[in-house]
Amino acid sequence: MSPKTKPQVKKVVLAYSGGLDTSVIVPWLKENYGCEVICFCADVGQGDEDMRGLEQKAINSGASQCIIHDMKEEFASEYLFPMLKAGAVYEHKYLLGTSVARPLIAKHLVDVAHQVGADAIAHGATGKGNDQVRFELTVMALDPRLKIIAPWREWDIRSREDAIAYAAKHKIPVTATIKSIYSRDSNLWHLSHEGGLLEDPWNEPEEVMYQLSTSPENAPEAGQYVEIEFETGNPVAVNGEKLSPAKIVETLNAIGGAHAIGRVDLVENRLVGMKSHGVYETPGGTILLYAHRELESLVLDRETMHFKEMVAVKYAEVTYNGLWFTPLREAIDAFVNATQGPVTGTVKLKLYKGNIITAGKKSPFSLYREDFATFGEEDVYDQSHAEGFIRLFGLSMKVRAMNGLPVSGLDMPKPDYSKFKRD
Image: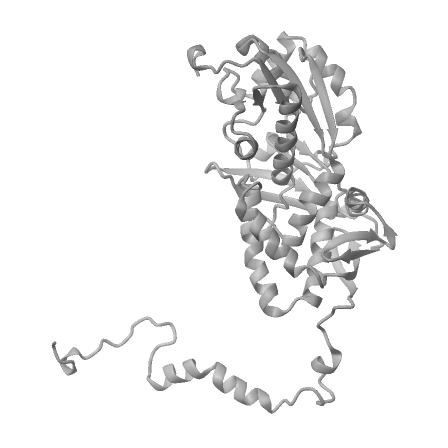
């Protein structure tokens, strides 16, 4: 973008993490837009180490102010748990840790812009990734009047090495180095790793890369039992102790991480069209998703459960693609919530060296009845009735065979058109 086409900006709110990219954006915005920069940091559970000294670092980088919001409980109750109830998993593996945090961060970014009277927001997402879409769609949905600045789509910095050099030139301390170059995103739900060795999918991730979970080889030799209690689809207690939504995730992260739960290696399809290779650690989320599915298997009827599985795929796409603040997501939530009334009960799991093993499940709304399922007494089920059911269920197959038609539908006999009269 040339200087002539740059929008006039007086005050911008930057989504700030204190990492390499957003650290260099602060002086870059001042140099290239001549505007006041206010940093906004979202505490979504990335850890005290990431938050320590953040405000002073932002000021030292040239920001006039740094605003920090503690959003951990809102993140868990209003974003993670709705996604959990939907059963959303992207491409069979990804539990959407980064994806689901972005609309929440962008929502607060807009709120802060209103609070301080800013006319623009800025973010550090690259032009190759999904986050630019998630941030900007949320801003468009909540306040399309705000201008959006995405430095990675404008500046001459083309690599993390360039960004490190820029930071050094402007005397901005950063933790990233050219030697250790992983790109990470951390929050209450997960920790993601990209770049470095992972740019070649043939490379096995190095063990020192992992931070939330131990390896299966180093996990305890004895398994650990954990009980999770749900009320209308929401987890409310772990091992009998009532906890807040964020505390539930934190507790299960610690328990699951110690037993090597939640590691995922995935080559995924980005929204922008390319594939990317990432490794994710989601210990608590993996346990919760497993437990929630186990309880649903006990209390949901077949048709609802099977349809909900299809809805889960769409919910994952909507979340991944940044369409959180849309009528579609709200409509899907309405359906999901309508299914969660009976999802109340307790699931007992055994964690052992990366495995989650079901050890028991119970619910006052269970649809499982031993007297129906047993091979013993037949007071509630007459096995002779199955014969008529099978005859009707397979009628179309029987007709096909009687007509001598192939099972696959291929090599169908050609009709004898000589027997048909022309109109």
